Length: 269
Image (cartoon, rainbow, N blue to C red; front, side, top):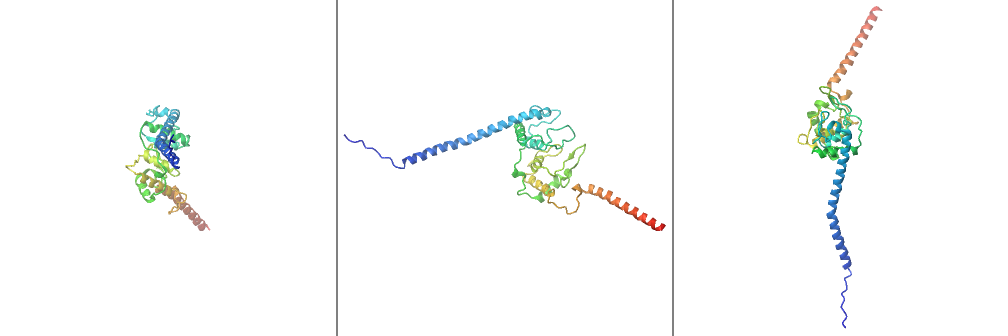
């Protein structure tokens, strides 16, 4: 009988088979990974919306309606966007403590995670301005001089040329911008809260907003020097003129009284 001939395997055959298996499995996993990540992101977003809806039902629905459609006590929130929620709730203006000509800032009662959930729910009701990233409102690449020019043109009429705020009509006011978070200033320009007009990117670009924020940080920073001496709060010529009128004229009257008293005393002696 003839011996059956047997083929000897090449010593690298096992290595080739293993590499092919890894390549195939890697390709499968790389194909499935984006889908799995997208599903995870979608699930997380749905969970945020659900949690935000619960928070909204407890703290906001009594004024804004159960579906955010608005009522006689509060405007519709459909289409205001996540940025409006982050600003209003993140500065403590909402939920409102009591109705009035203007809702002032107060202590924040929600955590940032809860604010994000509320923002996700409101954003699901209709498209609107999104919460800006740090790159959009951070100081990197900003032009302070350009920001000052834009602020004086668009904002100083209400907020004063250094952002100290000012009175408006019918009990309303432009708030002081010193100490306000850059993100909230950006969101205010995006959304136009209460009496403020909105400045979308078609009116003020993202770079313009960054420049304005950089200017406010510069004029109100701890290291900022006032070349004119005592700035008296930076409230402008009216308050400074009133100070000069009251104290300057008072000092002149006091000197005049002192001189008259000394003269009368000298005549008697």
